[in-house]
Amino acid sequence: MTVDSELKGYIALQRLLDRRTAQRHDQDTAPEALQTLRSRFSERHERLAAASQRQTSLADERTRLESEVGALREEREHFKRQRSHVTNMKQYCAVVSELDTVETQLKTKEERLVQVVAELESIDEELARLSQETPEEREVRERAETDWTSRRAVIAVELATLRDEMARLKQDLGPAAWSRFERLWKSRKPAAVVPLEVSPDGQEWSCSFCHASLRPSLVQLAKGREDFATCDTCRRVLFDPEQYPD
Ligand SMILES: [Zn+2]
Image (tube, protein in one colour):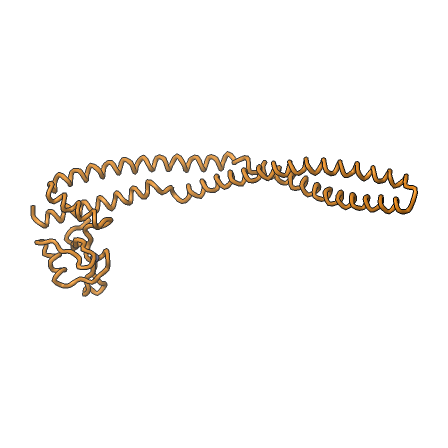
């Protein structure tokens, strides 16, 4: 097998491998629109879970406050009754002081109870709003999921085709050339063979992978196609893209 045909095989393999990488990436990456829909959906669920957790804890607090307020009111009545039965100033002062303490506590608890009830009402509203995904929203999301599933099925078919093409190339190359490519690929992936790159003025040549500039003799070697030319810096096999169009 000539260097030229072996190189042709390498380049074909490299292009298949590039396509495979791109396809695999596509297969693993849901379209941005779908990702947005999904995150909106899961965000809604998270908010729903947080709201319902808050609801439970507020409802517990309300129950506790209601019973505390009830107890304090009874206590207040008790001290009020005591006040009307005192027989001297000292007793009177003691009862009034107890009454003050109870009133203060009662006021704090009642205020908190009002806040809790108001917050519970607003959470009820939020839960009602979050609970329903509108039919339109649901349709859009489900359609995007279906489209993505079909797209991935297409990619899977394309990947199978690539696998077949690669197997054919492997056969064409023969075991010796194939294992040379394999060695190169294993140590240099994602690129074993790379095109030469020329500066806009056509004067300077470089490796398109590592961008190191290339000796003129190396460029000549690559263009001559009689022997493999390897980048001095990254050790990848170089080829002239004009000689091997896609
Ligand atoms: Zn290089």
